[in-house]
Length: 290
Image (cartoon, rainbow, N blue to C red):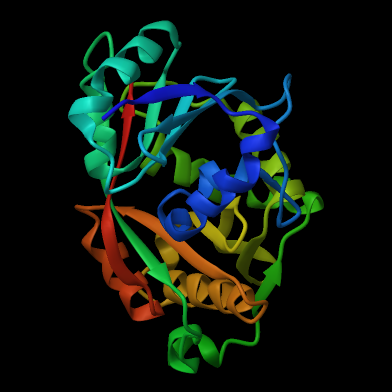
């Protein structure tokens, strides 16, 4: 079976979207790079996409999208003959400058085998999805908080960046930054401001102080991906994270969209909270860093 790996062209774009749609739940960030405002947009040169490659055998069998920052997103068909594709994929990866591989667990592991060196860090996650409206109980906080008149649910704006920064800092230190690496507050604030401008971020505040947050970190054609879930340690165990992800997912489902998130496989409290919110386990997910 002949394998062809070549750069996507505008004439391929409709077929690309048709290929991605059934797999979007596990490739939301990839889809977000070929969408704008919920509509398909071919990635133009000079933007966030460095290259978008189509892997074809008898038909389109995979897409490899490399960002300008070196992140490789992928979506591979279950019918892809991987043995036949090895030579073409290896030749392309030899020329690419990849710093990170992100996507479905088994496919990320397969692609790691072509990298010039082993990842210095790899994190395994469970992908979870929600397509049906969560229950009112899933969206509610615990009884002890429900009677608190100072507790408020709100949609964040760019003006809230400084107020939300302590939560974002806590999230990055706990979930993102490798042990021993420095935290840069200025960079964190700039990235948070960009997210507030481009994404949906909801939070709970108590007496005017944000105590828990969640937001989208990728918005595709039909799916939104949630991330950045963080509750102030002093307020944990009271259902805030569960309520936030359920309410945020419900907002999007009400608009006809679907929601996914991924959680570290060892984070049992988070998996329990997301399950209670209405999310269901899907497939293994993996991020590897070079």
